[in-house]
Length: 403
Image (cartoon, rainbow, N blue to C red; front, side, top):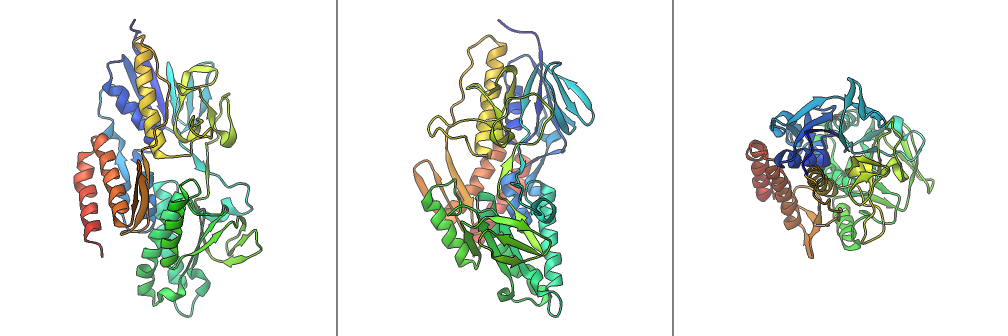
């Protein structure tokens, strides 16, 4: 059985949404595909710490959607998704409603502030390309204020959140800060970088051996690490910890967690506003709606715990949804999604890293190179040859030459 042509709307062009669009476009299913996203680019979020630290040109973290979505069956419409009218099968956006036959919600996440007083008002986030550029510009302005005879307290920088993003950001800034401070007559000894994590170790979602390696590496860089000390208040002049310690700073950065975005829709929501889905990644009670990536609440059958936000999971789920939509439209059986953890790689600056690929443990330069090669592999799966040749291969070459 083959159904009539079906209009599939994909809300979000992140890792998961793009995987759905590109895989579905390659299938023989009779679909017309519309991707709704407020940005004109696909963001490589794993590169944001390097953009914030000035190690990468912002263009190296953004791929034009017009170049990626080249199939005549796929169109990108710039629109900010506000919610969903599930009864009428419509996506609600700032540019009006969009009707659909099948819907894939892949809107990613937004920073979670845990209702910490002052955090939303005073902390810099690291979620978009603009956020990364804002952090870089803010820090360089702070270093100008901290120059001799001006505001020495401006040379203290605090990162809240010791997960993968916080650790990578801390490592990038540890390398960037002395370079940025030198023109202002600031010695490295006058710069203070503090990483604060509420749990008892960095990289709490990773194996303990990775946490130990990352903590030692950051400490060697001169980064102060506060573990098991949640942030309880942020102002424009300080960060206060649960222990009572107050760190005087004009720059607080937050990478301490995410939640699904607020959406106007009658969807089954779990912790963190994530959408409950069935084994086929359909929203519970709504067989025409799929949810993937950070916005979906998916329980890992191996651990019994929800999957953590990850580009790896989003890409897997996007491929699984594309396959199931194609199977559904052709009258073939759908296949339950089973997460496959291929590995995990953490960058610790230009010459260091830690991670695992299957059973293989990687430390130091091999881990750093493996992460860069993995990023190039991802670009090639998207068909982004131009980006790989212009940015990816020179970046790896520079890393090999780094002392």
